[in-house]
Length: 348
Image (tube, rainbow, N blue to C red):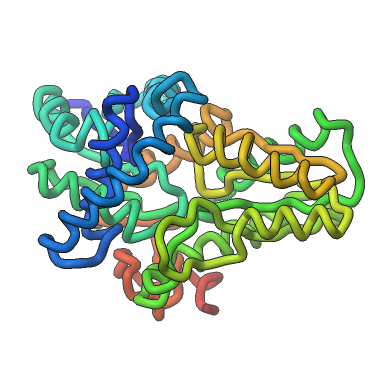
């Protein structure tokens, strides 16, 4: 009997209309991976934040038609991946599990059960692992009664993933007329410092991605990591994307921005990068401000996902990275991959 492979794609999700904005935010800030406080405190904090942020969030979603494009974008990736897996000869079907809005993990669990696969591959659309994204999404699958499967924890240095980002960056630069004196800003979603200091390997993996990507870019480009989307009073990892744009403009650089940790267009790219930070660049008289698109259905990225599924199909361990071995150095204790570290990842 041929194997039937269910591939569950995880992402954060987003409100599908104005009325969904506040409950989406409440779901987000109710997650113990995001607000690390006891439930009674987290409940009141989530209500307070969601109510206070909802009006401005609705304004931002209105700029994109009233709701988030994340689900439609993820559906396109799902369709492309399923087609690629079937082209490779696999009886595979993709399912979507969003973390903070519909379709939830519980919806995907029901759909997977009805399809009755012989193997389940859990594939988060977060290339770099974090307890706030990958771990939270995988926990939601387990809590919803999802069947066990092979979970892909991360793929921050997968060769085709890096090549796809390089293609997007160079293509955007070429379309803008190949300006000189480039500083490429690789912008990732930020995290509070306390999360990283507790052992979350996200920042290390972002740096790992950037190091691999830099090798594929023109040698005269400067490459810098920065972080966006700060929320709340805590100290967050930096530098911030806004401050990096200001500095690059003052330094006379042509600014080329890439959403290094986002694989789909959504509010952080279409509003923050394209509108808010573009205004910052203009205010500081930047030589140029160019934004590389998110990966979307770029063939190299879909190939990456298909490769990850094929490798996971051959694996019996519950968790694997893009190389199978643990990518993170041992001191990052929140990494879920308990295998021996890969040789090229020994240094912190």
